[in-house]
Image 1 (tube, rainbow, N blue to C red):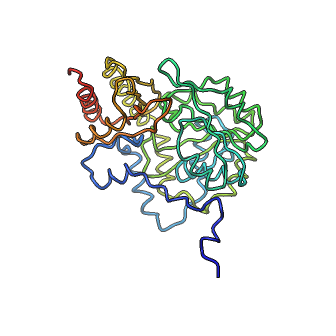
Image 2: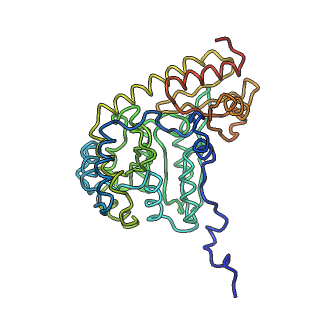
Image 3: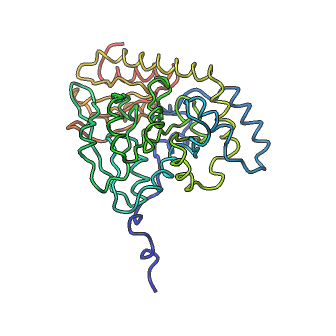
Length: 368
């Protein structure tokens, strides 16, 4: 008799359950300040909460396929209709559905790194080889490298994924490069999880009308502040959306998150308030730390800021450990570009952001 291990698909053997240790820590100790997971510090608006309560009372019924909320998403983005939209349990499930419709074991997914870890998690589960194309670190800035993305294409390339703005660097790629990549014809996923902070005017969603291979992905976990409700979506050509929707679990988005999402989209005032708060706080943190010698602050159009303190002689790990003594959880980053000084902060409440600034200034020996 064979051992159970011999029955696993070879490419999934040894893949562990995804656990976000810092989120687990934050839930275990609610006194800690959660400045690490790109969450929105502001709770849902009253309009969204009202929708949650209203549809919680109908939780005994199966949801429909989200026709109303998909129609709203299409309207906001200038798409023809709900047939151009697929919804999911967060954008993480959306990537999973897209990937499984294209990838066969041994094929390649190009990702521009550093980037969101979910691409690799879902790609490897399907047996894909993840091809990482690094951004260029020059003049205290991480630059996109679209030429290197194109150079990485082989006959095994099945998907190219680029985040815009990028997570964790917070910057946008020049729009002309999206056109160049789209024209390869290779399935091209543009991750716009944080685009609302800069406004939909900088979205690449219009490319979906000309290029059937382009898919735009978004989430309500960030600017809309609904990370715990798990709602994401993709926009694309009808025939492509029809095909990738074939991988959906039946009723993959529950009644409550579906109607909460609709209320969030309709509450334009609530979104505007959250965006304004976030962008002002990004500016506050950036300006407040700009005088620390050797400290690199990456300009961000999202709800997080990336730092490199390598030139100060300190490490990112040391910053994280010191911040934790003050009750603040920050996000660590891997060593890269010859520096071990990388770390990231998520925009918190006004109080938390000032606490963070004071903590860093104390750590680096700066006067208040």
